[in-house]
Length: 65
Image 1 (spheres, helix red, strand yellow):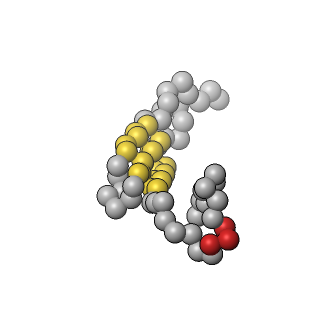
Image 2 (cartoon, one colour; image 1 turned 30 degrees about the horizontal axis):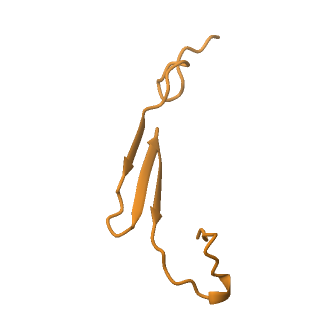
């Protein structure tokens, strides 16, 4: 049996639709949204902010939470 389409009806050589936007989170200093198929990822950047505890402060590095 030869399959000609995927479960989402795309052909094997057909890519999923993609979408990218910036500035999607209004209160963030920077943000972006990336969508491929039904998967959506949103990233936001806030800062710089005071870091607590202060012994973790390093002007050469950032912390991802």
